[in-house]
Length: 219
Ligand SMILES: [Ca+2]
Ligand SMILES: [Ca+2]
Ligand SMILES: [Ca+2]
Figure 1: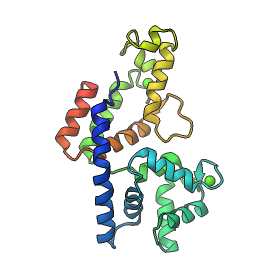
Figure 2 (figure 1 turned 180 degrees about the vertical axis):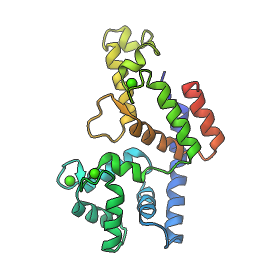
Figure 3 (figure 1 turned 90 degrees about the vertical axis):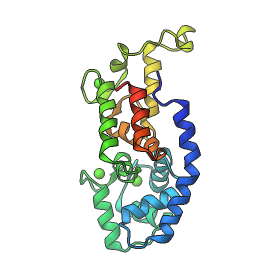
Figure 4 (figure 1 turned 45 degrees about the vertical axis):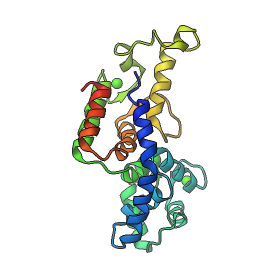
């Protein structure tokens, strides 16, 4: 039942070193890149390739553990990462991260900006998979959506009585919340897209990404 097959994971890991190297090369070459692009490359070149790595970067930057970054934490974090930017560049970058204008950057806002970029075709495919998983159409994937679609009868922990159907679904859904401070088994569309951004980054070929998604979700 898990769409993230072992095959996809292995391919993600084997591509990681290549991704780090190409980020380093790009950093060495380009001086005129946009600051967010540079920050993404800088994170990549330090090995924070996946959403989990970026989430770790966020937590390191969050000095007071408030689960959000204020302007000061952001400024310090960006310079700790090794990016030299002017105050106005930092300010500009802070505003583009802070999409809801709250004056702080939360984890989702951070990941949306820094996740590996995807073309429209890939995003459309991921949204299609999300819509299929969100059976009751309430905009999030929960155990309720999975109930009539997947069977847990063959799950060893269900058979042994160790886990209920609900627990199995919830622990499965937590995989998609990589980086969320308190994974709760409720998967939002943004979380789902973030999750697939990592897998997408490890697959160069659009046709292959298409195949992987269609196969996993029977689209
Ligand atoms: Ca903070
Ligand atoms: Ca905000
Ligand atoms: Ca739902």
